[in-house]
Length: 447
Image (cartoon, rainbow, N blue to C red):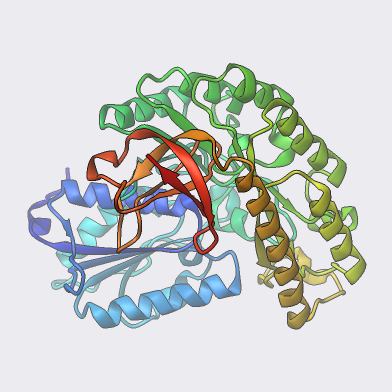
């Protein structure tokens, strides 16, 4: 039993880098602290506790992590600073040596963050707290699963359904940072979705590292999970954050398009490269033909579906010819948006054994071309729906931004100040889709 008396009236700040999974986990940690009597520090107010949930997907991410830690330490003198996440797992010793850091927690320890925080926070003035009360585990020994279903200050809930990855792509450190694939039971996830509905939630995003791999721990399947969640009363919408193409079954596509009550016509599918040569070097589990088949299947079943695609540029082995293959492949596919990111060298990955290295200048030029292609495709997709009516789940306006929300197929819609009303927050409102807002990549909604 944790003694919460030491936390009553204390303040906390949270900083998250990286994926939706990290944001979901941070939100859950914040909710736990709130239940212990800790409130979120106001803007400009010094915090007693700082929690930084880190990412290590690129060297830029590592740098941002260090900068965030230094900034929070500087802005909150005397605060108890906890660092967790992928960078903390991979570089625990480096992080622990940063002045002002109080506690560093790895992938296994993150599940017990509140217990570690409670002990360290209470004892910090009396004893020398061990900043890293664990030793770095081998991938096979990272086994804990920290449940998470929370929305923080967002309208949508983020439900963590899986963690870890068994794929070991040559460029990636995620298995070393998060361990092998593991998951909770469908029953426990349904219970969390039911709780979200009881709290008024209407939309849930399923998050994880490789969520299509769901079921290895429990002998269930991702398709079983989808069908079970679809039956939860009160949840109007589900979105799948990211699904590997080789794990996206035709059965799932058909279910979402023809039978599902609440799963939206919205997919995010990592491609990484449109060159079979590069896909083999990456040790991806599919070829470009399989990927194309999945995209065309989605569009056949759900013509209005939004399809986002992850693409990596400049990885080792990506010759100019390989990049042109990727560009032309993506150009002819009916996708909606590209998430483009440059390859970053990761220590310990087998990609470093590949001889051909792409210059930084070429990475930037390739990124620019793909981002321009993405804009063209997104604009063309949005313009199809101008003048139509659509149901939008709106979110409250924040930081001076217009009230906005998303249609079923993930078109961002903004309301003018004259049309926006506070009571629209977390409500499904039917609007007419107006002209394109090029500055915000959104359509104006008209009531």
